[in-house]
Length: 266
Ligand code: URA
Image (tube, rainbow, N blue to C red):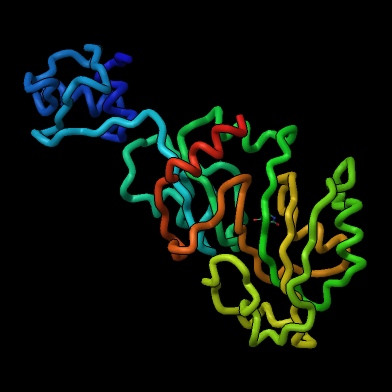
């Protein structure tokens, strides 16, 4: 497929429309070895060789990355105060990447980053019921009664109760010093902070799978049963699992199997 040279260059983040026009005028861009003269000239992203100051550019229509979001960064593309997830993605091709969905600033774990708007829409659509699994540390004792309530749905102040969610208690008498020891996936986990230590020193460790994505949903579900989430980490989203080899702040492209699994959902 052919597209305009200025669009090709802006999509790759080379600059704004006016900046890439200046580059073209300054003969900094070549197409198949010849200096480009018009921003509107058509280039074929598969067969044409486009260079910026002699360096060949690589075009990609879509990119997909698994990112291990650390605490302290926001799930946005721009923010005037905090680091955004995009500040961590330094080695990507496209300029139009965005995170699929949001995790709270203090939540860690799996985020899919892409520029595939249709796929993002599918994954976030409430009608698709994409399962998301979280590991959480909750102050106090999470009980079988909570498991039953989450299965039925709880009132988090929305029009309807939450959809049935699967709560698995990994431990409900963990002294805070031992928190994280029963973390099943990706054992890496930040240290507990002083403000997160419950008065009685006891934490529960749980895994919760939900199929919705309401604002602060996991924290609000526990609030609905009188408990406080002190640490939250997303382990999976649909067929995607937080890769063990990633440390907080790291990312890697989806592999073929992951991409195929995602696309087969559509
Ligand atoms: N639920 C929450 O409460 N916070 C998140 O970041 C994700 C799910």
